[in-house]
Length: 242
Image 1: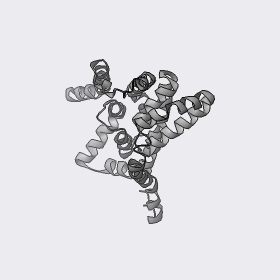
Image 2: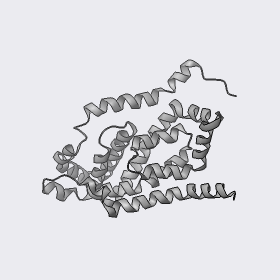
Image 3: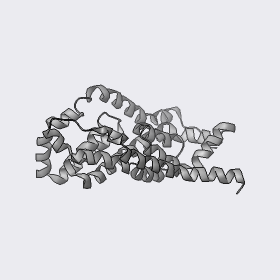
Image 4: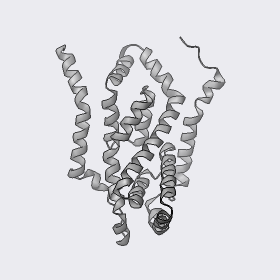
């Protein structure tokens, strides 16, 4: 059994996740209007002009800002995805959005795991009874659970970054599941963003209710069921003693 960390070092482990919490709280009040849809509408010509003059630099700056928004859970993640489509089109906009979102999610995952995740996962694994069975069940179905929490729209992105850190999911598995699990949502938002030029000309706002249209929702629900299929098969085999 490893010796516990000295109090000073143990306290330092909490700094990243505490920093995320503080910045998120401040950002929720300070940046709410600066990172909103109206800000994109008002600055669209400037953004397009800068993109046309400095395409590579625009991509780099956009990715960095998106990463910071996700990593610190700042308001504006949805608008950032729309902006990616508006500036870069469906492709490469979708890919750019996915890379930035995955990078930001990975940073908050690492911050959470450093602060509490490793210890909590170890205690769950060493526990007895129900706690250990829950941990074992999650471990046996990590891929399915990771894809499911990314696909289900009701699970906030921030929560989907924290849960894997709390149960000891390996970093590479988290990154892969995040990148591929956010494809449906990223594709829809980027597509909406790619059509913002016409929306701006008409003085309207983007219709995000598109997520609940059958042509979008049904395929996503189908993917959720597909992600749960291995879990169901394991349960059936377990009951039959296969």
